[in-house]
Length: 254
Ligand code: G
Ligand code: G
Ligand code: MN
Ligand code: NA
Image (cartoon, rainbow, N blue to C red; front, side):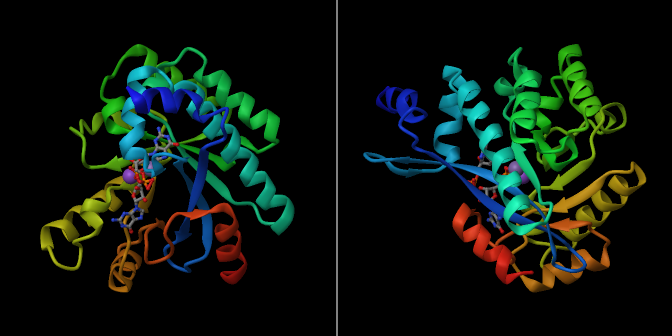
């Protein structure tokens, strides 16, 4: 209960902050985009990680205004980088189920794009399988509206849900993010290597791009290069960073 009342005031107290984690081309290691990851700096609680407060934000409905702030902040950050560094960097934003189902969600996305000036294809929304597999008409309709606006759509944590693979055929996704639990053991477990290889091949035959998450070791990058994985993300390249540190990372990697 205390956490809930603190969260209610967190937006106006400006206690939320976005960290950014690079997503690179697997072949070259060059930056492609960044995933925005939410942090809550509360004077009493310290730095709170999203696993601890997103579930409560979902239950209370606070995820709607918080998610709106995240979308605006992320789109504006991508425009700042474009203006100061001259390079176009895509931005990925996590969307949780309750936020996605809010009647104003599509409008909120369009509004974040318009007020920042970011082009729709520079924004990728990450959605979990859990949400997709609800399989309602509303889900299909919202995904279609987002797709038609030019925004990119990614399946997050792919492989950890109850994958009814048929949704990949009927819904307008652009990207699969292979869950880190598979990537972490590709050099140790033949089964995980086989699964990652199969996911990459399946994705490519469906015209989807693949991002490997949780890449921590150089050997994993060689495996992913051999298997033709398009993009990679993980501590091997960089941890999620506050914006200033992300900019420094950008400067030293260009
Ligand atoms: O680094 P990490 O601890 O940031 O993220 C933990 C989890 O929180 C991930 O599953 C991630 O998808 C989720 N998450 C991070 N930022 C956001 C956000 O802005 N919105 C939502 N809905 N989930 C987020
Ligand atoms: O669920 P989602 O994929 O959005 O969340 C990404 C989560 O993975 C965040 O908590 C982020 O901090 C974490 N993460 C990013 N790179 C790595 C990595 O290389 N290893 C591990 N263990 N976690 C990572
Ligand atoms: Mn994600
Ligand atoms: Na993920």
